[in-house]
Image 1 (cartoon, rainbow, N blue to C red):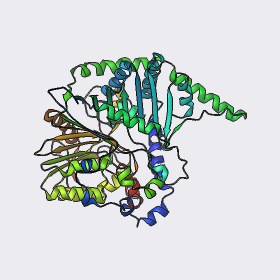
Image 2 (image 1 turned 90 degrees about the vertical axis):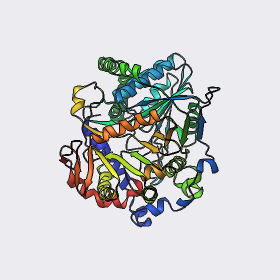
Image 3 (image 1 turned 120 degrees about the vertical axis):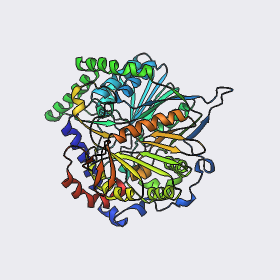
Image 4 (image 1 turned 135 degrees about the vertical axis):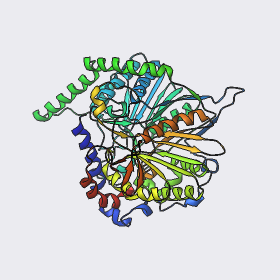
Length: 522
């Protein structure tokens, strides 16, 4: 995908969210927060995982005497390393591979992953793929699914609701998961696309995944089964061969395109060699952390316009944010939140004020206008961020530039625009520090619409310190908000609060009003 395609995709995301919303906006009093949380009592949230056990929630407490419930974790900050480890996992597979992503692009990274999956299927491994069918990002269509069927790889699509289902189409599967043999797994912020693996020469994401091997993986695999087998996840329908010549030519071009995607190429092989050369030494040095208390939580599949109103939606579907609420409310020292989007609503404002009242130190890290892939989100961020600074909250924004953490495959990547995409939280408390890495953004979509997942580890301070160091290293190489319309870099020099380069302020200002009106869908 080139830069124009990526830019068009982001424009499409914005248009897609706004094209059908005026009636909903009017009903929600323009701001929408009351509509989003109309059935919830925030003050009742306390130890929800104990008082109301979730169907997709598991806590493993390691027993050193028996070695039961052992889980070992690796932190994957580098995109190149994260891609190589996925390749290694697929090659290790002996029985099953489960693949689930919000975005699965047929670009170089997608080609590498799919060709590894085909090789695994050829040696008898059961391979299943689940992809969200959001119109704004959907590319791995039925032509690809049909081609993979010959290798006994089944592709299903989550929520294939047509665009005229003006509410249901917003209930997306935002989870990211790779599970091998129900024994090892990766989850975190990365989708399958060049942008997430440091392979784009135009725009890339600084992201973070966790690799885990151990007993908790069974719960992650069970959650995949629940999503894959749910009625909202549809088996693909083979494309029908047209009879009209023009349409037939398009059909044949698509078949050829997919065949080329599945075939080896010199460019792919050259990239693989460079990826492994960079990643292999780093993987060999990468530390594994034993986790004393491992928690996995995910939202439930099947959310839609109808389930939202006919079922107790918050209790039956929205589990991850309740777990996060529990974790945050137990913090008494410091809370570090890294999220590509920071959009306040009544729930996040409630949490933020609670932390401030408890004298908890708050550190936020998010995207600037220069680094974001969603300038309409930045329009809301800059409306609030100076108030946060006045309250004593430390806020960093990514500048939009490459950070030299690891080498890259293509030299041009260093000059690309970079955004942050890691969804990470650190809870520092007197009763044990904890880290969460998952798919959850701090916005209304993750809170209410998208299905999300998260992996938590409590009790290993070395792991917490490693993740904290990564967050703060990236944050401090960006810009710190120090006053109204003022920011400084790591040397203390004043810089453009909107990030490096030449960010489009005019576009952001025009987007402020519509993004405020429709923030319940952002």
